Image (cartoon, rainbow, N blue to C red; front, side, top):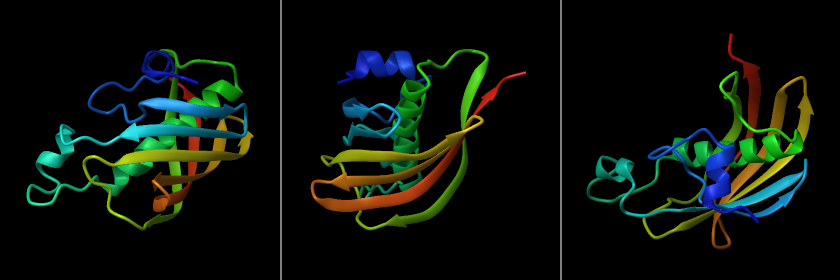
Length: 146
């Protein structure tokens, strides 16, 4: 549906902070299903933790937010630009159910609950296979840079 080249055109994030590798499904204004391949080469594993590498929970949430941004940009038929920024505005009910380790593939599932005046609310979950790794409700805002 959307490979890394298209993702790079839609998201302003770059290495080491781009956390979406591929979009598998996109239902305009409703849902997105994307992938994050987790490798031992990720810079955060050097310190989290040297003896047992685990992906930080906040980065799982960031990966979900990046997938949500792709869904929002597509819903609005727009792309990010130098006059607009997409911010996290809130995280509710975040739960971490399973550690994510090198070699895992995170499936990012995001559903848009509502969109009004540049504020977006999403229900999001990250899965490894059929196991829930992380879930949360995310609020994001698109704002003009002045």
